[in-house]
Length: 78
Image 1 (spheres, rainbow, N blue to C red):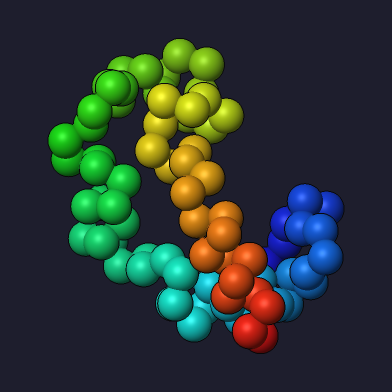
Image 2: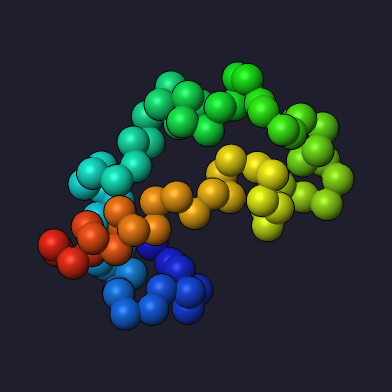
């Protein structure tokens, strides 16, 4: 795993261990689809991703920061 210098106070190895444990994010395709609301978009359309890209715009559910506290707490337990 590479964070390209964006991980502060935690190593790439610690992040990788946490993510692979599956305690914060469930990476199964069906669960990701449901968690991100990909079959029923609210406030955005797939066409919106074609203009100006699909990263860095708060309208997309994959840009939410709602797991920050959960990640921080989980990293303290590693």
